[in-house]
Amino acid sequence: MRRYGPATSMHYSFGPGPVTPAVKAIIWANIAFFVVTMFFQDIILYLGLMPQAVLERGWIWQPATYMFLHAGAMHILFNMLGIWMFGVELERMWGTQFFARYYAITGVGAGLTAIAAGFVPVDALQATYGAVTIGASGALYGLLMAFAMYFPDRPILMFLLFPIPAKYFVMILGALTFMIAPGSNVSNAAHLGGLIFGYVYLKSRQGGGGGSLVAEIKYRYLKWKMNRLRRKFDVYSGGKSSWDKNVH
Image (cartoon, rainbow, N blue to C red; front, side, top):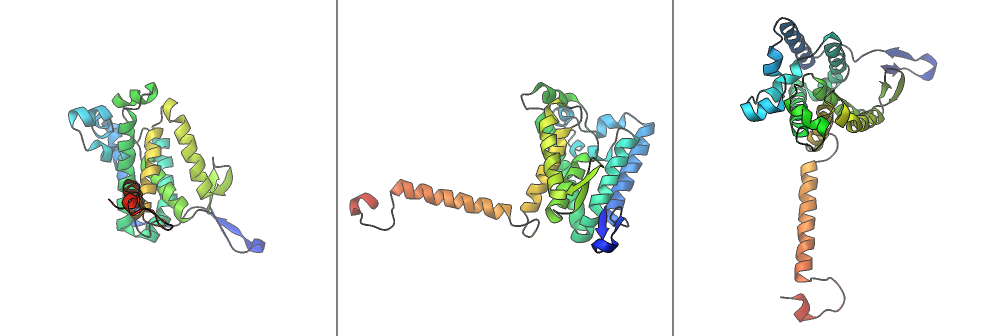
């Protein structure tokens, strides 16, 4: 929901406007898969994400296909509504190619996080190793992260009740996801993975959310290496020093 105009003549508009190409394709693909699963339920076992099937049977397509399946009408409705509300504006800003790549990376990254969660020494998470995860929520959380990074002060309705800035909305969402992940039937590990992969991917691109994560990591590594060499060779700057002590 957006607000327009000065305080004396403001009005509200719901949603971002007409659907963009990639968002439209994503929504139609999800609807098509949803219709198919209504008649062929077994498809969920093959295209949904089961860590055990990926690692032991070699069904490596599942981290990509699970995000197109949904458990019910409300599940797909809310996910597609979120993709439309947050994805359209991002696609207009980025372009279709970058948006589609980002959506795929965060969705697959969320799936990989769900697989990794099965090895965490917590009973509820280890139980997910043989469970099936479906839904576009992981990729949607990636869109939420991007939206908060580019439009941090844009108001979003928290629990559909009261507006808060997007940056705080994602912070609260991430904290809640992290806290309830071990004891929930919902794949909050995938949600958290969508947030993390979205943040890391945007930070790793120059101009994609402010700075380059790769450059920062290289800088920190070189700085650590230089400090280690200084300690190794006892090199000191300034003051009087002993030639035999500082040169080896």
